[in-house]
Structure formats: C-alpha cells, structure tokens
Image (cartoon, rainbow, N blue to C red):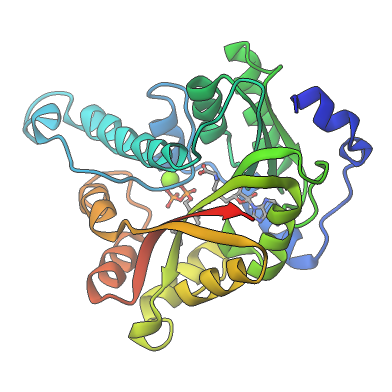
Amino acid sequence: MTSAELTATAPAALHIPGPATPYQGDIARYWDGEARPVNLRLGDVDGLYHHHYGVGEVDTAALGDTEDRGYEDRLIAELHRLESAQADVLLEHLGGIGREDSLVDAGCGRGGSMVMAHQRFGCSVEGVTLSAKQADFANGRAAELGIDGHVRATVCNMLSMPFATGSAAASWNNESSMYVDLDDLFAEHSRVLEVGGRYVTITGCWNPRYGQPSKWVSQINAHFECNIHSRREYLRAMADNRLVPQAVIDLTPDTLPYWELRATSSLVTGIEDAFINSYRDGSFQYVLIAADRV
Ligand SMILES: C[S@@+](CC[C@H](N)C(=O)[O-])C[C@H]1O[C@@H](n2cnc3c(N)ncnc32)[C@H](O)[C@@H]1O
Ligand SMILES: CC(C)=CCC/C(C)=C/COP(=O)(O)OP(=O)(O)O
Ligand SMILES: [Mg+2]
C-alpha cells in the first residue's frame, strides 16, 4: 500500500488530537524543547538527524590523534557514523522490503531513520512523534531532499496510529518504546502490520537477572522522563500480541565503544556514566528484537 493510500484509508490522519494523557503532554514538551548539540552537531555532518545511540568499533585511524588539528570535528563525525550504523542494523532486520511497501516508524524523532529506510528500499515511510517541532523538522528535511512524497512525519500517539489495519509491511521503534506501555504498543503494531509483516525494536532494557532496575537505570529514567522496561516485559508483551521473535540480539558490547568515545567529547550531557556503568555491571542491556506478525 502506498503512502497516499494509507492516508486515504485513514481519515483520522487529518485530525490531530491533543496528547492522550498528561504524561504524553510532558513528553511532547520535552522533545519540542530539545536542541542538544550532541544531536544537532552530529546531524549536521550529513543531514541525518538521530535521537538514538551508536554501535560498532571506533575507527581509530579516521579519528587520528587528539592533539591533531580538527580532532573534535572528526570525533563528531565518528559518533555520527556509529549512530547511523545503528539505524543500518535495525533496517537490515526489516527483511525484504519493496518500493511499493509502506513502513511505520513509531516515535520517529527528527526522521533520520525514516530517510535511511527510504534511501535503502525506495519505499514509503510514515513516522509518528508526539512533538510538533520534530515532525516539522522531519518533514522539512524530507522536502529538502525531495522525498516528501515518500517520507512523512505526523504528530500522533503511537498507541493509536492513523494507519489502516494490516497496511504496513514493517514497523519499528528505535529507542522510543520506553515511553509507553508495551502491551498497548505491541497491540497497535500488530494491528497496523500485515500478517507476515516484520516488527523491529532497538531499545535499552533492564536485565531481570540483575534483580530490579539499578540506580543507573533509575538515573536514565529520570534524565529522559522515560520508563525503561525489562527484557522479560518485551518478550511477554510480544507473545501476547501475535509478534513472534525471530532474532534477539544483545548489542551491549557493540554500543559500549560509542559511549566510551562520547564520554571523552566536549558534547557530553552528563548521562554517559549511567550508561557505561549500567552496561558494565549487567543491570542494563542494549538489545535488538525482530519479530514476525503471525
Ligand atoms: C529518543 S527519541 C527516538 C527518535 C527516533 N526513533 C530516532 O531513532 O532518532 C523518542 C521519540 O519517541 C517519541 N514518542 C514518545 N512517546 C510517544 C508516543 N506515545 N507516541 C508517539 N511518539 C512518541 C518522541 O516524540 C520521540 O520522537
Ligand atoms: C537507550 C535508552 C534508554 C534510550 C532512551 C531514549 C532516548 C532519550 C534516546 C536518545 O535520545 P537523544 O539522542 O536525544 O539523547 P542524547 O541527547 O543523550 O544523545
Ligand atoms: Mg543523541
């Protein structure tokens, strides 16, 4: 189904209601007001603006010596390369997507992953975010790139998306599932996905083997006003909503180099130690889960 058809079958898209809950109002305000250099300066590298973290080994040769001229710019480019590599890992797990397919990015931020998905598959991508500023930004970038016929962000609650039942070949949450109840979220993905469609999430989750959320996990929750779920909650909520995991990948070792590098930069935000400590003590994990809608 094309993007135009999606909208045609979903007139609710034209009506944008206010936040469903006071909490969603808080989150909308949070992202409307967000302008951290660690996100904008990285996005400025090539025009892909992400609000997620990185994976992969640091390219020390490209980085060069800290004393060499231009080191800070190379550091920013390297952090950005690792963040785009993270989105590539997510997209790789969407499976075989065709040009005629429509995908859904739930919690799309400034739209970096949507642009990458369109560039990779030639497909249509519909994103939703609570933030009008983010949606405007994402739509502005799509227009600048001349792909606004294929990539579009809408201000909308991901728990009640304006897309027809069974209309999406694939959907995902890239670091956006810690803002919602997982049963409600997966019920909505399951509704929007066609049978046989693919769902992928990359997320941080607390590790049930640690016991309860550690102080570092609590610190991350407070920092972002979010509510990190446990790994067990993800798998249970998927099982309850016709989403059958095909891959569960622990990306924790792959994301640590990003954090260790970021902690040395001038763009630190103060949350770096919480991520590094919780990944190292095993209380927190960075995971990818890919599931089929059955
Ligand atoms: C950390 S950002 C991730 C953005 C994007 N996925 C990326 O990788 O760059 C979290 C996003 O989730 C969105 N979000 C949180 N709760 C939401 C909800 N209930 N409905 C829609 N979007 C939501 C926020 O507006 C924000 O865009
Ligand atoms: C893995 C977890 C728990 C993620 C929480 C969601 C979140 C805020 C992601 C990054 O956003 P960002 O790119 O705006 O954050 P920062 O400014 O720290 O780069
Ligand atoms: Mg960031």
